[in-house]
Length: 215
Figure 1 (spheres, rainbow, N blue to C red):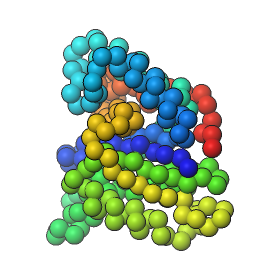
Figure 2: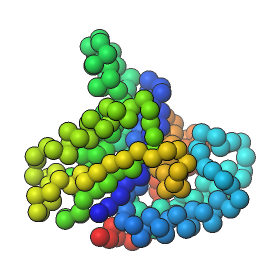
Figure 3: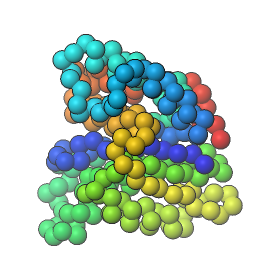
Figure 4: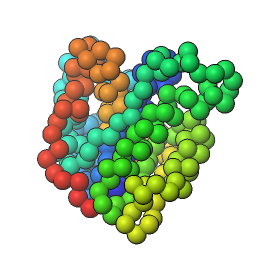
C-alpha cells in the first residue's frame, strides 16, 4: 500500500486551482516526519499562507524543508487547472457549477494519473486535510473512480488500485504539512514563476528523488 498526502491551493479564486502532494510508503513517510520535526525546531505548526515572504528566515526554512521529501524518496503528484480558461463555457445551474469546480477537476486529473502510473501490484490510499466545502463531492467522485472497470485502474489480482481515502482534521498530522508546501509551491509557479514566492518555494519542486518508490 502506498499513501498520498495531498492538499489544495487556490480553490477560492477563479484562476489556477492546484491539488498536489507526495506519494510513498510507510518507511518513507516516517523518515520525512522525523526530519521535518527536526527542521521545524520549536515551531508548533507550519502553514504556507501564514508565512511572511519578507523575512529571510522564511526563505531559509523553505530551502531546508523543500528537498526533504525527495531525500526521503517521496514522489511529487500534481493536478492543476486554470478555471478562467473554461468558466464562461459552463452552463448555468448549481449542478454544473459544483461538478466543474477547479478543485474537482484537478483532483480527478491527479487521481487518474497517479493510478495509471502506480507501480505494478500496488494500491493507493489518499489522505486529505478536512475540507468542508468539497469533502462530500470529493468522496462521491472517488467512490466512482474506485468502481470503474478500466484495466489500468485494477491490480494484477483484479482489486481496485484506489483502496481508500480519508479526511483528517487540520494539524492532526505533520505529514499534511509537506502537501501544503507542495500545493502552494505549484500554485505560485503557475501564477508567476519569477515571483519571490515561487523562487523561495522552488526547492520542493526541483529536488531530485534519490530513492526508488519502493514497495
